[in-house]
Length: 400
Image (cartoon, rainbow, N blue to C red; front, side, top):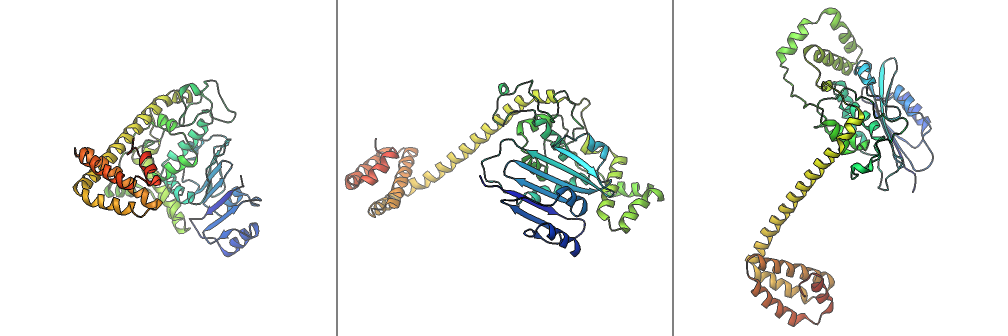
């Protein structure tokens, strides 16, 4: 298997300066570099720079994909955008971590698989699917953090989506993963109705859908925003000069996104409980969540079976509607069968077979089976010496 590594960096809050682009070019001569993006693919060799350092100095987002199973997402946010104390409760060694610089907070999600997929791996497109998580975090939506913690939990679940309860050894633990007696962090609201970006993150981290469903059972629904313009105006009116000064300073410094994020967070905290950190009265251990996976799996399989049944029923109805139109114009279809049979070509014989199957099923549907068999006998009398055609009809079970 050939090597594949995909690196992409993105800047959102400000464009890169020419001197910064030149510094990046010195790191990689083959990378595609613009004022907002850095991308490169390696099929041999390796990236000479440090993604962590580049995030600290230049970029707001980073995606890394390798075909041996490593997926990394990093997001840089202004300090104060995310509650660092709450963030700490989701940290899992080697899966979800964060660090800070003077002005920024950098969060890193990483999934490393011991069994790389044989499927084709392509890193392009992940950034577009994941980047909205940054804004969601700034709004106080911490579901992406819980997904990171859940990825750490999954390390201690040697199972796939098709595994049974017997496949899981209760004593199985992996060093560095979340321990079975660990208590889960705050459970965000809305885990059962993830955003598009959060769904993408669950895919990016390859989180088992049954584990996610089991964990999401304790998550309350996200309530629709009920704040009116009047509520917000009253809150702003109550702000003192000292309270408003830090936000105004950020605006003057050109940090409008940071000012907005901090204002929204302050408003949410003062006016109502944050929907992102609503939890159940009693948080669960990993072992307790683990016990719920079997039920979640059974529910998923029941849903999938019902969906499959609905799809089959839809196809059956569509087929019946089509066969009804065939039955209404039998002579035209028989004429087409004769014309195609006379061409003596493989593609024409394939079409003859398909048309005869349609005519046969249409006759059964409309109780005109005898009429079909009479015309089919006449057809065989004329074309029966064409073995290639007859073989096709035998395989279609028109000739028994």
